[in-house]
Image 1 (cartoon, rainbow, N blue to C red):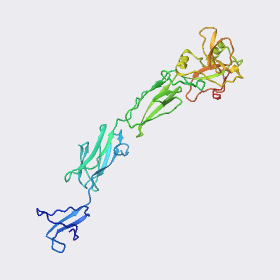
Image 2: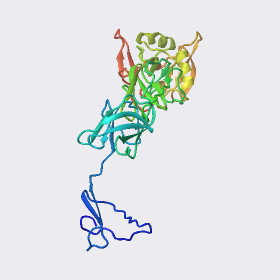
Image 3: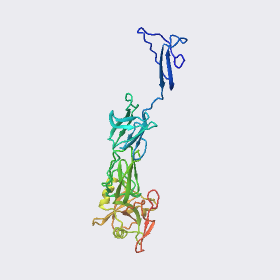
Image 4: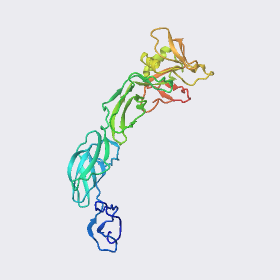
Length: 374
């Protein structure tokens, strides 16, 4: 009987022992009596008090510096942690990591709370438990586990992309081959991937297909961020990117090849130089150049391209036949290819008509192949 209520009945075994298992006893005092039957006096009495179930646990693991909870079984680049949990009031506990004691005794306060701030923890898997320094040394279950990874890192030196490249809507047919020196691979390590990679100015540098690619002259900041919102940065400086426009600024509206070469330097333009031609041959597929043409305007089909190397003929590009043609250098064409350093702000810094410094000449641009007049 338990507090006067029959809770079990049975018989003595052959060894004259009476064995009965009682579970889920209520908190508070209990008077157990053994009687031959409920109406007879007790032959034996045992008195005990059932207390509240003691909690022994690690309830929280947070980054010591950022205060962010580390979810069970996840990875983190943090190395310092604040642990807290429950144990017997006014007792002490020891902290174990991977089965090895790493701290203790840790005091438990009058409310059953304990806290502990770790020293720097080594990278790798960790399994934390606490053991009470009382009774038979109870241990918290299940363990709190995590994996510590190296902090997010990347080479933060300045990246310089100085390879010559042409980026213009007048030369749209890239073949997918990178210009020499215009791209670079730089790999982040550590932290929690996948990483988010952003550029402060995509008109200067962008990230695609695992590479940083120069798009326009200037500088930009690259930021790499992991899944814990940790980030690292570095600067990219891009140079030798050229834009292209097709137009005319001859006083008569047409120009021979010598006049074309004579007027280009006055606006810091370049023809298709040998270095630029190497880029076209490497990075572009034919047709190399494109602008709006119609059969009704054959004079607008052709544009002077580059230097003559001292011969009487010079190369021009025919946007209608989409081919390079050789012409007598004295032939007067309406258009010429004009290359110039590409600003980062956009595809071109030129207006539709842009007066020369002396006010005598104006460059009139042709629409590109999509019909846009840049």
